[in-house]
Amino acid sequence: MTAVSENPIETSEWQRRIEGEWHGRPGLFDAQGNHVGFERVDRASVVEDGVARYWMNTQLDASGPLRNRFELGAQFDFGIVDSDENRVYCGPDFYGTGQPYGLFVDAHYYSPGWQADLRTWNQVLADGETQVYSSVLHDGWAVCAVFNGVYKRTFDADTNPETRRLVDEWIALETRRGSVPQVLPTKEKGAWTGSLFVNAADQSSLGEVQVTIEHEPLSLRRARQQVTWAGALDRSYGFERVRDGARTQYEGPEAFGNATSYGRALFTSQHLVGPDARGVEKIRGREVLIDPDSRELAVVWQLFRGDTTTHFVHGLLTWEAR
Image (tube, rainbow, N blue to C red; front, side, top):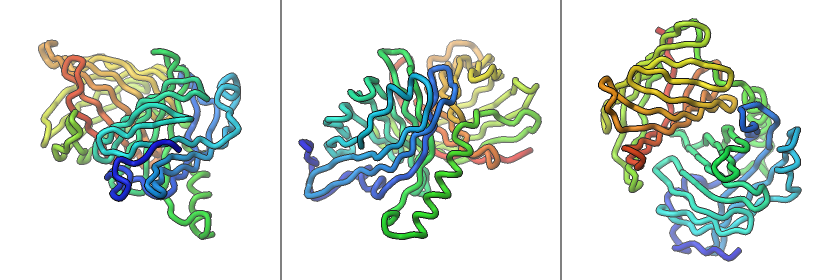
């Protein structure tokens, strides 16, 4: 490895957040949102003798042209400059950077092996043991594939049979729910509520915001939602949303846009036009319905003013029928 930690003694806060080994089986989806397989992953970011590196042991189980493209037959391994400002990926398997925002990191890098440009969002939930992951892979600006899934952390999976059993159970659970498309309640009113973390564009913490998403189904494909933020940021906007297969449209009156679901992960683009259609804010988001039964929703919203990022809002919302 050629990358050396900026501080060989003190690791970054993000590095400490992701210590240990993480286990998952993210689903693989084509550009249209069709599930085509899974990739079994064990991975870790480690600092040894002052040298930071990231390794990923992967086993791809997929079909179609993406199987040919993403089957590498070797473990990923790349150097890292460990920092809370810019985590730099120094190759040979990935080149790029990642910026931590508290419990969330926004990474943008290139994979020579996959011949793809990746936008990866890793969100550590407040329990510190669960990580919601996605990588959107691009050919130029065009999406060519998406990986997404939920990981659990261990420290002794190689030596403790009980931990190994828990990992196996987690992988089986992820296999069952990883390909399930995101379909919100179609005949049940309710709301998602919770406290989300807020980070400014300069990565500083601004506290928390209480969020409520009121959900009222209008048909099997259409629902009305009212979203309210209170706390570090105050916002309120309502819209009707229509699901058309893997696609979702937001049809106003206060937010317009669209989204595509890749399994349980919905990738959104919303324009917050407001009641007078003069609003200038936008949200690029990822909303992951972790489990279709509990309906927990892991949210990351990148907030823009015009086309300039102002905040990242992220955390977990829980469902309550009303």
